[in-house]
Amino acid sequence: MTSSGHLLYIWTPTGYRLEERDGAAPAVGAAVDLGDGVRYAVQKVGPSPLPGDDRDCAFLSREP
Image (cartoon, rainbow, N blue to C red; front, side, top):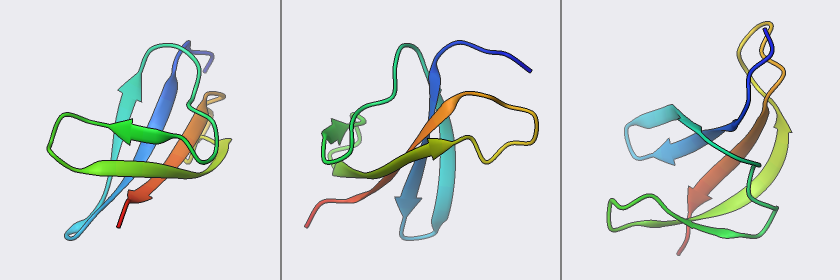
């Protein structure tokens, strides 16, 4: 599967969620605002966790 855009793998207190986004994945260390009142930081950028998906995935955690 070839797709444009990237994925965000987002940590939440109740588990993880995936979101699709347009454009390139944010860089490691970048702050990301998802509009939920919480700021997240990119911990790493790697391959998508979805089988056959060649998009990059930014793995986020909550900023303190």
